[in-house]
Amino acid sequence: MHSYQQAFLELAVEHGVLKFGEFRLKSGRTSPYFFNLGLISSGTALQRLGRAYAAALSAGGIEFDLLFGPAYKGISLAAVTAVALADTGRDVGFAYNRKEAKDHGEGGVLVGAPPKGRVVVIDDVLTAGTAMREALRLLRAAGAEPVAAIIALDRQEVGPGGLSAVAEIERDEGIKVISLVTVHEILDFLQDRHADPGIAAAIRDYQARYGAAAPA
Image 1 (tube, rainbow, N blue to C red):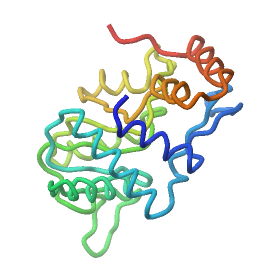
Image 2 (tube, rainbow, N blue to C red; image 1 turned 135 degrees about the vertical axis):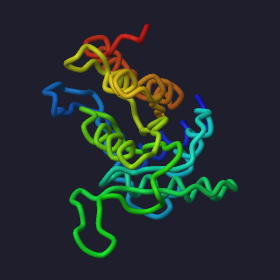
Image 3 (cartoon, rainbow, N blue to C red; image 1 turned 30 degrees about the vertical axis):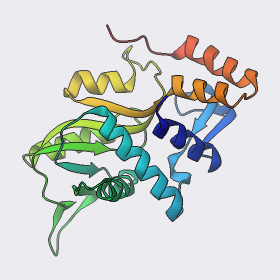
Image 4 (cartoon, one colour; image 1 turned 90 degrees about the vertical axis):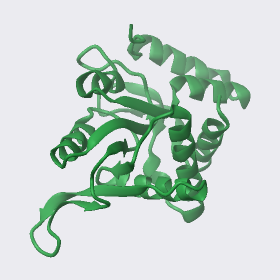
């Protein structure tokens, strides 16, 4: 496990972003863990989160010119990642979208740096992928080239189409999706912390039932 992954999971547990128990998901499944990145809500925590995203981008080896954060959660994520990259000596612009087009002032849907060149879309998770697909459509319509997306957690669960949400986006949109962590890193983290073995067993059982097969 990379050091940024360890640091991210420590942050997630510390702030209640990652919880263990029994949680009813929108899909109707009962999950042994729940993830809510919206609970990162202080300056120091956001700073640590931005550093984790920036480190994951660097580790992913993606060449890019711009960060894009889909409204709403993606806006702050793109901003703190841009700041974290600046701290390493790389100044990258970021942009985001409004949920509704503005008909006065500068107008339009897109805000921030001009959407051009190679773009990485930043968000928290992929569920149905609707927001991600809309972001990719907006960027391409503006003349930019989306090359990758980065999310905090890949649950690696099979969806209605037989693939995970990440695999579907990669197949349909032709971009790479980078995850700060997957379920495998969560299991490694629990083992390193000598956590209750029942938690890890419940997660493994859940993945055995709902986990997506690795792409061929």
